[in-house]
Image: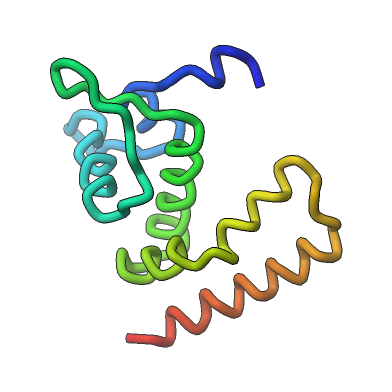
Length: 123
């Protein structure tokens, strides 16, 4: 990972990185990120002088997961909280450094898919 990738990012940069799109005629949706910070205790940016937020790679990856589950999978805030609080979910990050075999990854993906189905059925 390069030094630039490891650098802290501003809230505006994070919005672009995770792919949040503004609604027609509105500015970039930084309010969405701030709302997610309140809802998901795992997101902890550094807040420096002037209340400016700075996010590290861990925060950005977590925001990507939240964005995917909420916006692309159509889950609720409550459902995403359950998933993020499940320790097994976070183990899927092991694929980044190839410490998990393809077969094991497939098995975990099936388990994750089943968990998502169960969560969608709970209403």
